[in-house]
Length: 243
Picture 1 (cartoon, rainbow, N blue to C red):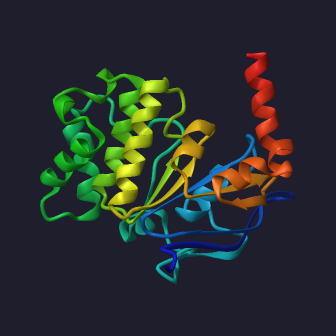
Picture 2: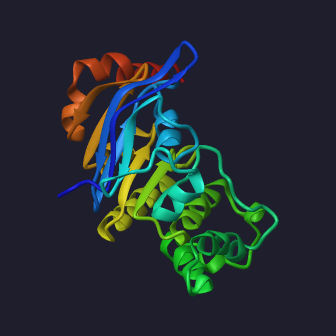
């Protein structure tokens, strides 16, 4: 199956700092690819390069085989590559339905209200559509941001730490939701520190460290890779014991 989204030899430099070095990525429809690594590894920079918030210093980003790395962010989103963020970006004073409606309007949907309702139903917030975003729990705000992304009718969905700060029940809901979206044919690229979520839902995992890919493959293979244990998973275990 050909990839919907590809990054080919992507490097990003900020002055003398190399944030990404020769990174390759491929995500296909109906697949969950997780990108993991310690803080500062380059995960958010990769998302920013894919979605047009920054331009790669070298290399290419392709969507359906077409280079998109010189397109503006709004155009990339209109094409069908949409992301969420580490920090929730929701329309606080607006009712949920209106906030999600903005995503559908941005894509030019012929029936944006129906699209907004469908997106809220997909994430399980249809019963709270009358509430304002700032009345929601943190976990529901994370779901709302996913609904806003879905309303824009993406084909590739980039989720930046969707389970961050969630309790076990909320993160289990995120796992189920991502599984449903995969079944619907979305190509999903997931950045996440919750290793239970990553290992449960991922088809493949790639690991960044200091801007370079140090491992990529099936979750079980990556988890057992000595380089990954040394650079990231071992640190997580130490932090868990210390906490």
